[in-house]
Image (cartoon, rainbow, N blue to C red; front, side):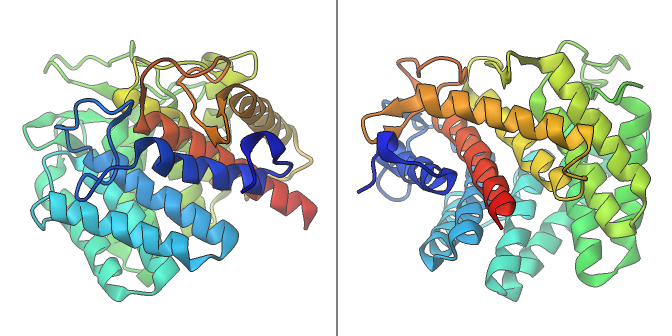
Length: 353
């Protein structure tokens, strides 16, 4: 087996990161993955982490063409359903939208139309139960707080809506996507492109400016790219570029994003940024300043990640990629590393071809 210290390509490194998730976090059915390494409290069912795992396994399938990775993605999809009582739905609209996005990619990879129907069912459920006019027409964060609106719910809603529109040209998907995007731009996006988290959490009409997270930036980037792909209008791509660069100015230090919060959900935030900046890079002129800046950050951050996360023949990253992992690591943190390394491998392949 190729070890971490012997690898020379980012393709090999991405595969080691994928396999290391199973090595360090693997658990018996139905748990599938322990929530942390070393294993501790597994009582929390992390529905949305697993949704991102579906995406991560599809990344590996698309990179390698190896059907084993697609089978792994299908297994995770079924695991979520089984542990969620056979239901696609839960109380959190952002959770469901992450799952819907992953399932739609699973449809694209497998051609199984039941996956398309599942993604459409999630979208309809979110509109029926989460869409309202409080603080402007948009999606609430969860069913128990219909008054609280945020980027984590509306960002993936725009992306899923725009992607569903591209699948079938049903105008209602695009109409909702445009409305939610306008809400984001008018409510949580600063003039410099930096994206705040949410508004009205305490029913006081106030913005939560103290939560400065990479995944909010990534989501608005992804929303802009998805609408550009759906409409061909360049202004959405320009919005995405502005936010992607604002994130680096505001949140990066010495070529990396450092730790956000204390693990848990926050461990996944960097991965969301990398995933959607990857979609932006597909459309930028590689010789342009924005692309060169973003590619440079991708290289510096994944270089640091690889350098500091090697453990024997495996990879075990912490939330701060400038240092080795602490004594306890959540599998959400490992997912962010996988997403970044999959993007690095994909960009390297493009440059070589």
